Length: 208
Image 1 (cartoon, rainbow, N blue to C red):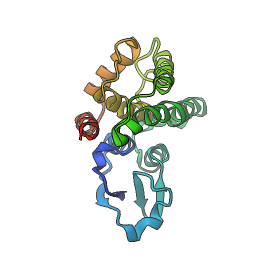
Image 2 (image 1 turned 90 degrees about the horizontal axis):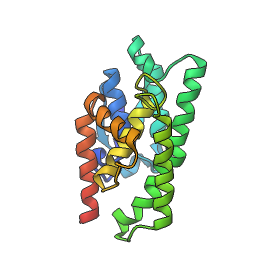
Image 3 (image 1 turned 135 degrees about the vertical axis):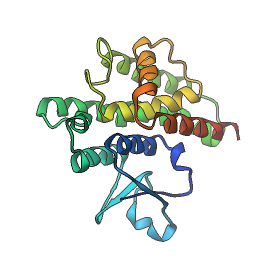
């Protein structure tokens, strides 16, 4: 398998960290390589990360996470990451789409222009991001993980984003459930140390 990236430190990318944590949870080794310009056809949307596995090329981190569990999950613990039972999988899918379209989107909208363009924060975009975090707080009401009693790929994906937000100074304290979940995930998520370090490295870009 080949997890490819171009012109950036892989661990700075929250989506790449989500994939790496998923692979670690499954015990699947990933060969990390830089993707060169002459291989750009492998990722026409210029997205990070890109996975190449036995001739299959995938980009978009949530899709890669789903594929890794379906393809390489071999134990009941692995299956918990992306359950096969229809109702449980539907809930995971719903939260994955929320992560992709609302939480991570809100993170990018608010922070990208600050980190890469040196602009000040947009108050309206901050409120949209806060609304997304409030929804995650609601997801976590009365349960330790985003979809219930077991950690899934949703938790790993959101962990990568939330860790980066925290490194950039986002205050999680008003969101008790998210704060407690984040502390817990830092203790139990495979690859948590890598994730935290990558989040800190991403935050350093803002100060350059």
